[in-house]
Amino acid sequence: MAEKLNTGSHDLPISDALAEFMRGGWADTREDVAPLPVAAYAAKRRARLAERLPGERLVIPSGTLQARSNDDDHRFRTHSAFAYLTGGQQPDDVLVIEPSGDARLFLHPRPSRAESQEFYRDRRYGEFWVGRRFDLAEAEAAYQIECAHIDTLPAALSAPARVLRGVDASVDALVSPAGDDRDAELAAVLSELRLVKDEWEIAELQQAVDATARGFEDVVRALPAALAHPRGERYVEGVFGLRSRLEGNAVGYQSIVASGAHACVLHWIRNDGRLDPAEMLLLDAGVEGDNLYTADVTRTLPLSGRFSPIQRQVYDLVYEAQTAAIAVLRPGVRFREFHETAMRVISDGLREWGLLTRAQADAGLHRRYTLCSSGHMLGLDVHDCARARAETYLDGVLEEGQVLTVEPGLYLQPDDLTLPPELRGIGVRIEDDLVVTADGARLMSAALPRRADEIESWMAALAR
Image 1 (cartoon, rainbow, N blue to C red):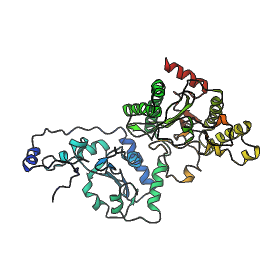
Image 2 (tube, helix red, strand yellow):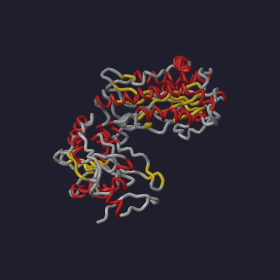
Image 3 (cartoon, helix red, strand yellow):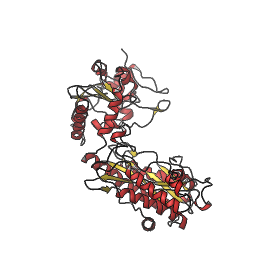
Image 4 (cartoon, one colour):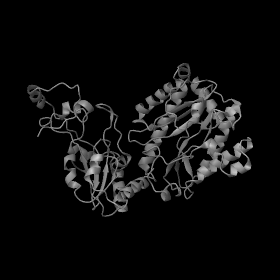
């Protein structure tokens, strides 16, 4: 049977003579591979998963390549659950945990050059196109898991199994629907296992946060050039993106670079506006580390280097709300409490400004100006553990080792006639990353200033 290869529409034909010439004359490049630093932690995570769903066959794919345009693929980013359980980052791999608790990793190994043309002809998997992959022995050494060729997966999935669906359609097709929401339960358990971070994860997150702080410093240093550019927002995006690629895998999510009234758009990612020194810049960005853990930090900066009185008024209220929210973080506190605390401060402030009556404040109408929640779990995903059941997350209580963001904001829309003209078009968000400790929470992003006067001093120091 002819070898199936992923070739492009404009690839040149291969003659028999060239195919024969390509078979031989290659040095042996097999490597002595050390275990991945995460391998021991991943083994413990797989064991906990097996304990949560005992006697079950569990199937977790890594994901597939996605076409960006024709035969050009997006850069691959493995599914977070697969990364959590293996440390792997290759497409089309599949982890299977057997009812016994034993694990096998099915993957697409590096083929023999004497027996396959893949290495120079296949655009998706060929070594000359995308780089070298592990052979089976190297993969077992790296992941510390029994490994098998992906072609043997169908036979391994002939018995009933739960599968993390929606990640790899070809794997979904191999496993009959489990029924009774058993597949959905697997997805929920995989999220819930990640609610509390182990020491390795916390260290990875701290590295991502530290790199993010350096990225924010890069941005402040680049502001004079960005202010002079007709697409200053995009200039800032590029500066931060460079730091993300230099110190990590990429940005952890699409950077929000919002100047002026763009800051009132919660997920402004067009980033095509000009910067105005009379306005502020809301930068919401995070570096995703090489092992895919991401930071998530927001600062709102006066582009002139100093807040105007009205800008400072809005900023200070958000700062007070965030400070109050951070103060309540500790084990045993309801997850929603820090948000409720922040919103009480915001609501009281809006009432003092004359924007809300007491009755309106009591009715929760402050949400016209705040819109969204004030934080979320953080980890492999920027909105981590999103498929965890409400009783374990949103309606649960905080535990030591959880990592979360605290990010209250005010978004005073430019066309909101309930606001005085001087407040319209101002958006402020302050977001920091924290890890819950035995008696409180540690501010992981403490390297970046939060208070208005600290922001001004920091920007002045970086401008020298």
